[in-house]
Length: 178
Image 1 (cartoon, rainbow, N blue to C red):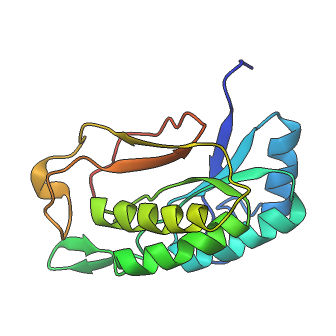
Image 2 (image 1 turned 180 degrees about the vertical axis):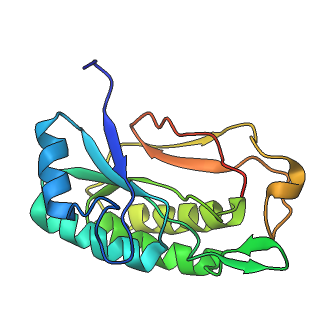
């Protein structure tokens, strides 16, 4: 297709299936055969459900690298706004299991804030410090915010979100207003 790394990201539901009913092992095989360099998951579920699906993907294709971008939990509507219950500390605790299962592109989707990504970055730094055999160099990139200040969620932070990358280019869709 091109000489850039290809990241193919899917959305899996709580039951570990795509919305079309495809299992993680079938998805991994098909995307690998199509030339994907990295197979990923994003959106729809929080870190715990995404970890279960990642474990299935990793067991089916241990030679692949993966991307993981969970929501900050399953959203609840509170006073007309969506609330995502997963704390930054909870997100950080999921970093090691994600990395242990082949994750090489790590971030967050709906409901994550700069505090979530910062907590994951701290956990990533601690993980890398304890491993002599490290994955490719980590690059932290600050991008200009794409949301209005009032849309940063519960934190109200005005700082741009940090993205965690491991030697790959990440192209994502614009943030969707909910």
